Image (cartoon, rainbow, N blue to C red; front, side):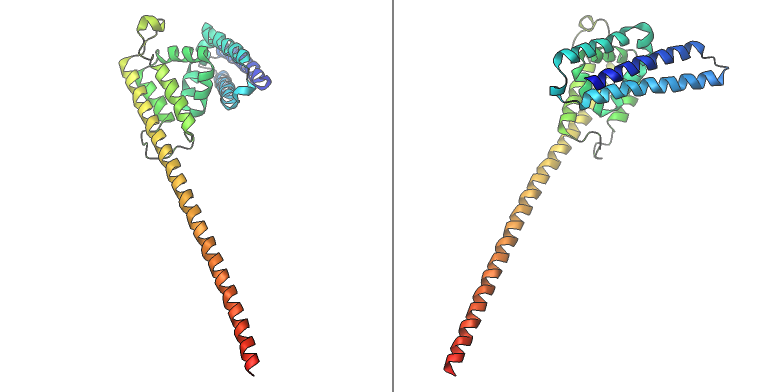
Amino acid sequence: MEVIRVRLEKLQACLKEQISAETDASLSDEHARKRLDEAKAKSKAALMDILREISSTEKSCLALEDRKALDHELYMILADQETGNTLKWPLIRSLEHPYCYRAFLGLPEVMEQTRKFLTTIKAAKVEEILKECIPLDTTKESEEISTFDTCVWMEQVLSYMTGDGKRKKELDGFAMSTQSKNHIRAAINRVKSRQDQLKSSATSKIQNDSTQAIEQVAIIVDRDVRVLDQERETRRSLDLSKLVGNER
């Protein structure tokens, strides 16, 4: 929790720097624009560091109360008009990275704010983000989507982003367009295809391991048989030499 707390403080410092840079920025001032771009990059990196840290932290290492407190603190930053607008796109763009999805499941308030942000952007942008995360060509292996658990987490989060079949009134007025929902559902189908790939690979590995184990046993047995044959042949030779020697 201490590491995440430090990262949260870093995010808050980066946001202050970015807001200050936005205040000073002028389209005619190249130095001010450069400072703003650098500040935006720092804020995004700080947010991603938090999500990555939460995603990689074992459940037992992050107490429920600590996680709830962290979730609420992040939510308050996102709900604030100034800092929320600053983090809107970095948060939406975090959906491009499979490793972030586990973090969302552990941060329900942040996930809800992300869903709301997602309803405010164009369907084409939703499609672009999800293509970046889950390539259209599902026959190619994805290094980032490399475990069955990751697929499950992604499917759960993406389903949540569609509104899970709830009505607009139940979604606090933030309902996603039909086109955006279709892009997300298509992404969910690609995730399921990836799940099938991983299942197939796991099954093949088990079968290959079993085959190799059987072959190894066969080799050992064959080797043992050859050793016994050799021992018998040696004994026969010795016995024969003794018999021949006795005859002389």
